[in-house]
Image 1 (spheres, rainbow, N blue to C red):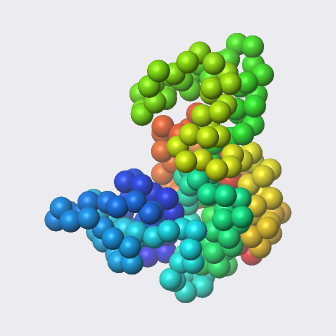
Image 2: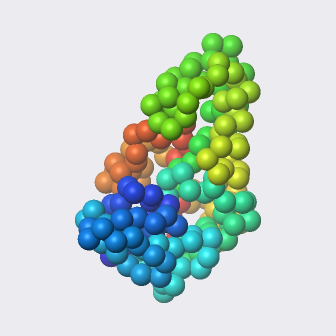
Length: 205
């Protein structure tokens, strides 16, 4: 297994190692628990707290991806996590990160037409959010303080975190929904996150 997904929730990639802190139900009905490998829905799952070191050797992964994980940890924990990803990523390997885009929310707040906020409210309405007010302040605050979020990034701040973790920032590239350096990896992006996300990639020297 040469590919790792961090913060997968129930969206496991077959043929990858998928990790999250969540308890998932295996095919026999039993629940996963920390420290073991489990087959869940055709994917290999490792229940692990990503803010802690991974019990894996250096340089073993060709690709690491993470969708909407980094905003759930404090900035110092995010840099520690990225440092660990740099350690277990092979030379030339790709790290792809997506997270809610601070720039989108700031421009949305200032937009008198509120196009992004109106469209995003429709998406939230189909998910777990109820009684969404027609409020720019609410829309900004929910991305900062809802869902266990700790810190919201723009592209430049992700690159700054890459550099603090030991990556060469000149190797970073802005990506887009289902577009990136490796098309088959970018194609795995989740549809319900596309409207609000910033996508960043970096390769290890």
